[in-house]
Length: 216
Image (cartoon, rainbow, N blue to C red; front, side, top):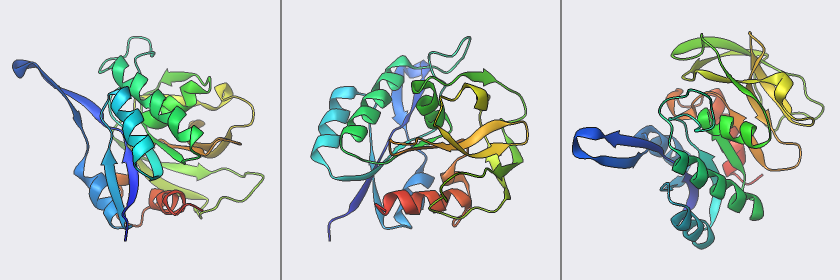
């Protein structure tokens, strides 16, 4: 049986005293996806290699992982423009091949910013657990979420609902009105502002992973 691959991007890490810059992936991603009989294909932050891998390996889903900040954000720290470039290449290749894309935290921010949304710095989201509410949408979601549930956030930058382009569907929002989950009306793209790999098994984000990786 051929493995079902999920490609996933990686955060950039540095070891200054060694002069090293590397790519890093939380092992919880590998475990979480393995629980769903999915094999992980980590993508380096190198566009030519990403192009090669995504054209060579049959991918069920692309995940844009968390960590780091977008280099386009004003006065942001922990930024690496080459990661932004690599992930934009991955998004374009996925779109061309009709591969679903899930942006997680920073990945959701990149998807939103790419569409023209505005990100702002907001306290009360980094390192906190808070309630989100599911938003009514015209078509039913392909997975079930309760009207309210708790998520753990790890971001300083939020997506403002008013800045999202027309047609982008907000699936869940925080009590302060900022976007916690959204989907594109025509592209196979979804964003979550919390981390599936940090939830207990069977958490709310797992329902999204199961749907997207199942190719439904």
